[in-house]
Length: 296
Image (cartoon, rainbow, N blue to C red; front, side):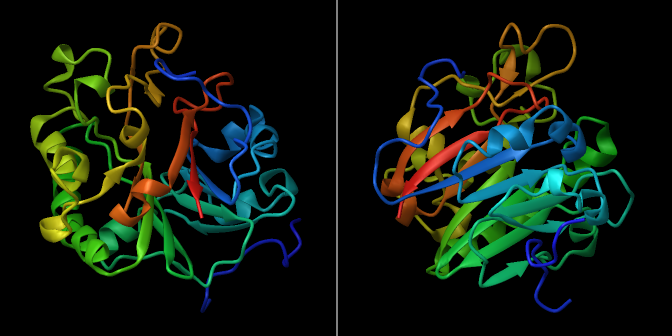
């Protein structure tokens, strides 16, 4: 079992187009954050994810789709030396959804609810606060299973809009990590035309996500929920790299993918983005880890 001092407790209870670095770049005072949809953390662990993670010298790891209850992740194989972990499991059903944050430094506060029980109980949000910096692990619903879940996804999107706007205006710095289940443009998906009617590439979804992001504006604007900065696009404005590939056929081998995993940051962190990479050499999940180095 994991030593209680190691496991955190809640307060109160190779991509196309750029070179993938394998280690921290020789830039002083960096903060490395990794976002990864594990599609089952126990499965990813069995494929060597934590052995790889131990080589990355990351400060924070944001996981989506743990697909487990916290007690099922209590073994030392799920807790690398030097880290503590915090979880928000899905209470609606077991083996579903779930998010987590691993960190070297103990956060000042960990939050696991945004105020809508249906969303919170699916285990889709966890936030760690370090001084004036918040790191969030988000898992936005997929609508690919049918109209009911697509409708729920649209509800979540509209509900999040004022929350994200409030965060932008708060004066805090945010890094929103996660699987957003939406591409932004034709640069982010191999088969653009054939996916126009598929969840994740629907025009209203893209309009919503692009409406949040400042890189389509003349300048960052914190009004109306806009002004978030897509860290990947800061360094690769025309990059065509992907973070998810279907398990069907040879999608990954042929790089027929989608970029749906992001680290969106507040405008104050735009110039702090020093390097980013998508790690594809090993296959831990149908998603690839997305790594960003920030100047502190």
